[in-house]
Image 1 (cartoon, rainbow, N blue to C red):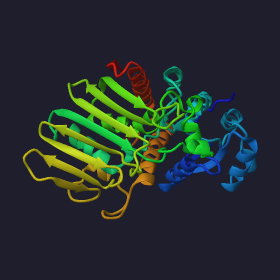
Image 2 (cartoon, rainbow, N blue to C red):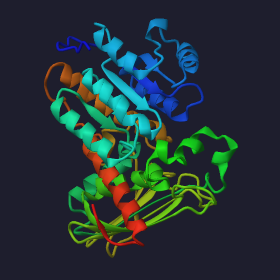
Image 3 (tube, rainbow, N blue to C red):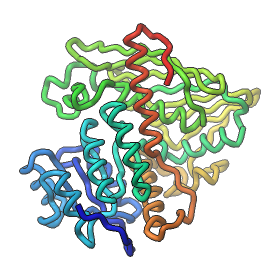
Image 4 (cartoon, one colour):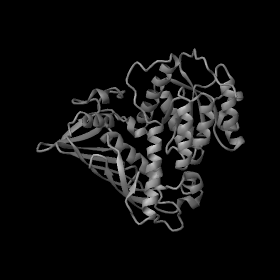
Length: 389
């Protein structure tokens, strides 16, 4: 395989995509996010595992015929050999394909933006980690998109500045209701692969959405759990993977945590939220009201901090696109991750650090997420036995 060594690129970052063909929700989300700040141009793709659908999907997106690939291996090889080949690839496949695809493009010297969770299992994740350690010229980002919300950055900055004091309690939850019945048996594609251990991995709900809540809890609090006790359940008859999870956590500073994730909670759509309590105050943020952050200094009235409003921090304002009062949320959160990665890629062209501070989930976040899933599965199998991460 030919690997580019020199880099005289300029202008928009040429982007490829693996997965995300016709009918894919998350593929469209990544494409919108990549274009929102006009920093990427989608030029190539292996958009489906079926060759015919890969071709039709590429044509529908207006890709040049010679850059519509039937599989990711040929795409990585061909794009690495082209002088105008892609600089980055977005991986939006089911979980079991994340690592094989990432490995092919990392070997080709192409930056990777991968959907979460990182891998099918910890063995795969560690293999990828070792490969990235050898290829330090390749940027790897994991799209934990909720960490791109401005008010999440505000919360993180407030905790880091000591405004909550010593952190004592960290709580996260992510309830949904779309798997309340056995919808996977109806042929619903998104449900089918999520209910299949061969494609989703050992964790069902805990891997699909529990990892989002877990990543935010750690990202905002700045803490890392040292052990957990988990109770994973499959309430829908015949379902192999968990559809509900309760997890208790013990953090490295002595703080305690609780996480609830469920896909069988009628009345909830995407109820992701986090609550953090310290010796001096507390914070609460809900994904369904992403522009609001509630801050309560102990003994004082509750305060509403708003995106772009009075009291918004520099950390939040850096990721704010439009004036306060206008809705800004899910797509913009994804776009903020893409924008941060773009700044890193543009700096890498000149072998220097980015001109501004950039923050995006990396391989370390992916390894932490896989460790969390593995520990939850092990703990639950042992009737909630406390398990080290």
